[in-house]
Image 1 (cartoon, rainbow, N blue to C red):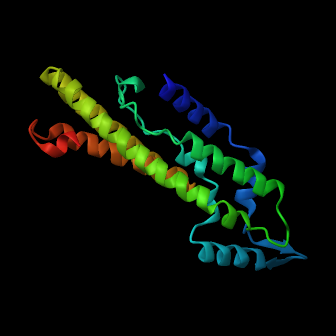
Image 2 (cartoon, rainbow, N blue to C red):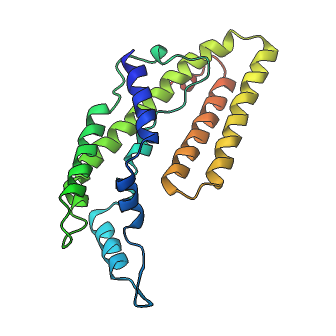
Image 3 (cartoon, helix red, strand yellow):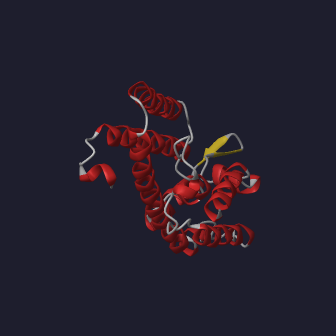
Length: 211
């Protein structure tokens, strides 16, 4: 039940991104025109800050996209996942608060200070989400092997084709998405479909089919 609530909350959060924050992240570093001439010091400062801190401005502010849960098979309920999977809600909130405070207290003389202050929160969040997604995919593979084996042969073929169709859709959507972080999520979804498809075609006694 807790997994379902947090999963739904994450989906809502993903769609309710703060307008001011999105504008801040999107406008930062753009070339500005002053008196008819292009000025690039802001872009140069941003590039310098990104190299110095080892992450990009866009990466740091795309954490809501990264919080999105892996897509489960249609017939699989979230309650069927292992109960010990960390949902990363606490590290998400810590990073979210840090970003908000950074925006509120931003000093024009040091516009990228939140990249320093929030980086530890961002690193913990990224590690947690990566581990969470690995465990979710592992749980999906185990559940799906059992479900797939219960189907008759025609239904198994349809099931595999459905996974392939979803994979092609994610790849198509990724190729038509300009946003880098959203494209990465769509490509990850396609990769998960490919892994699931391959897992179902492995012999039952193959150890990797259950990991």
